Picture 1 (cartoon, rainbow, N blue to C red):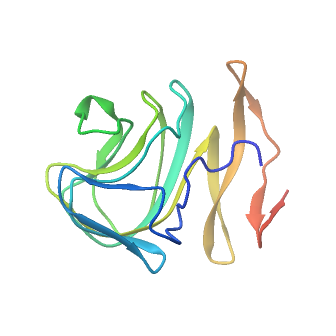
Picture 2 (tube, rainbow, N blue to C red):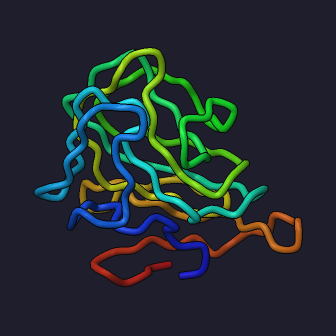
Length: 165
């Protein structure tokens, strides 16, 4: 689907595609989740975003503790790249939007290390919303930017491996 998830292995099916533990902490990927202990900039994917483009993100957290979370766009410890947050740490679905200022996507702690698990990381270009399908929240793209203009998209959701309108 055009405008699909720019994140590789957002379901953590294997210990691949993610740079872990920039700035300290221990992050392991196993059993379909990323488990974070004392994480600062705990999960990063490089070269997945286009500078200046709007994105919507979602991910799940459980067993979470810490002062705050934020989304960064730089592959190193650079606070000037924070594009969303900080916001309070909680368990459940985390969602938001940002405009990329660099090409990396990072999950980061704010002021105190993060502890907990992360799963189902989705970062999709364009404006979108989420709907619950079979008890699971799914992203639905509502608008997409073409040649600098936001245009309505035909809302669709992935159900059982197929896109449904």
